[in-house]
Length: 293
Image (cartoon, rainbow, N blue to C red):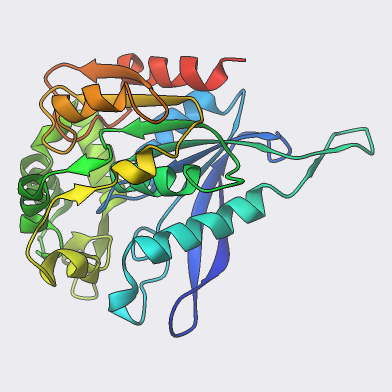
């Protein structure tokens, strides 16, 4: 695993966007993984390792999360900036790569795996003309999200609680992220390890800028309707859904299957929002889809 970064533009200057890279850096087949609203690139460690023998895997920390910079102008947090940062990353990744032992250079092929927010960013990019995305995996997200689901997320995002120990922080994660499903103790420890930061006073808190919640706090929750975006997507698409998800309803998932990319749908029982792609049964269909000819 290697850590890289690049500079991207915001309304008052530049900010650094970090990503972690797995596999052969000269492999022209690239999988880009983008996390959910309050999460970070390390959520994809297990999936990236499972794909790294056959693919170059790039897992990005969106602005305000993980190792990426927090924005100076907090109002910039939102999809226009996230999509612009994603396009800057794709421009970097689609530069032709060399073929070892040969003067030939190949243009990379890009696949996208996005959880929740990362899936929305993927949809917005895939719907554009000349999008480089060849295959798209949407993890528990779709073109319609109810205001009730957004209100639930907004209830905890942006809070900045502090804890005296990593164990207390993990206990908190288990409560607010209970919809992730029945993770193992080792998986919860992994999430806690990569989701926290330690402050100068020694206490522990979240590894994201609380100001990412501004879009939730600045207006009353309302339904998100991206059906016009969805209808423009034509690349092969796989939709993963937690059986108990409130973010992508069963009705939305069914309608997705007959519109736009008309994707394959897989549901995971006993899980809400969102499957964490850390178990063999969740990773297997993603591998199968992405490694298909």
